Length: 116
Length: 112
Image 1 (cartoon, chains in turn purple, blue):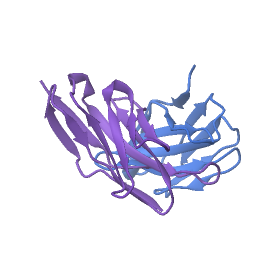
Image 2 (tube, helix red, strand yellow):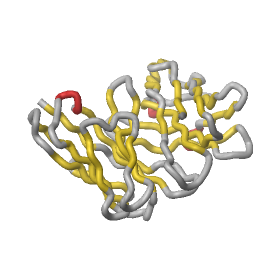
Image 3 (cartoon, helix red, strand yellow):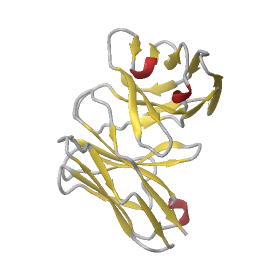
Image 4 (tube, chains in turn brown, yellow):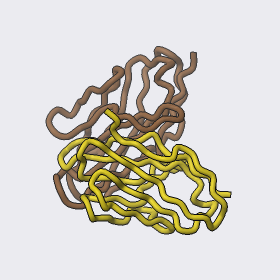
């Protein structure tokens, strides 16, 4: 079984300030980790992913995330946010193997509101 | 390059009516998923499929049925709609390796 926890449902931040969106996961097997972004009235788009290797992964739009296995976390960060980053962000996990019954589990989402 | 296409985009049903949501992908992906999105609850998995002719239950399967007769299509059916099924439904597909999900643009369903 696997689960994802995003403790912050909403995060307000001023434009050009840094932001961190938190994600913790639980799984009985090794996992791949993802962050998706959803702009209003749209589907979800991949922001970045961790599969293996370097624990710091960089994504689109200046976002990055760090995988911490001991703390089972995958927090998303951006050093300076822009108004256009206002969106909802979802953390997701899936088992780290190919084939079989692959469930992809999402957190409840964090709404990032960038204040001018 | 269409990716994942969902039809219809919007639908209003009365309680007890039935309908089918269609998801089509043109990326030859093995895996397909149906999620529902409700405020404050994120995306919850309804049913999924790991290949043509297969289906499996997700977290919230009750009241829904699915079929995957062709690899590129994944149908979600509501036999007797209830107001609790008012939601935004997303279809997604994934290749059979370490790839991410590719999402459709969603179907907004209202059951009155």
